[in-house]
Length: 144
Image 1: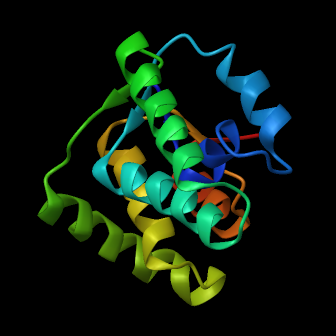
Image 2: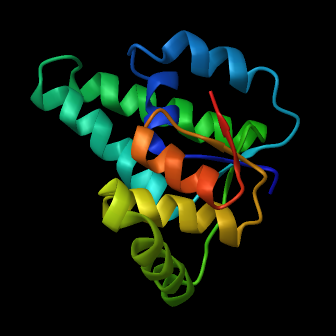
């Protein structure tokens, strides 16, 4: 996999947010699919459900957004991938020792960086500052 995107980058593709235009512009230029690990799918779904809780969208809107995610998978823009959970967590533990003492990275941020490394991504898409710093520290090209 050439690219990896965390949920802070993917969510604005479906829910209007400050990074929406930037994320849309980048995704249109990609030459390979964005991998979606189970964690990313959970975070997307949870973001949609949080939109319901905040009154931004309805349950029907959430279901329509989820159909859009499925359509992106079917079209090849996204690719569902799995990683061995133990290996993913082991890598995140290593990253925690390296980055959390300085950056105060959260566990989910580290899991995304770990997934990108295990998938041998070259480019990491995120709007999260701490996650971007950890990814850059691991040699990933960070965008936007």
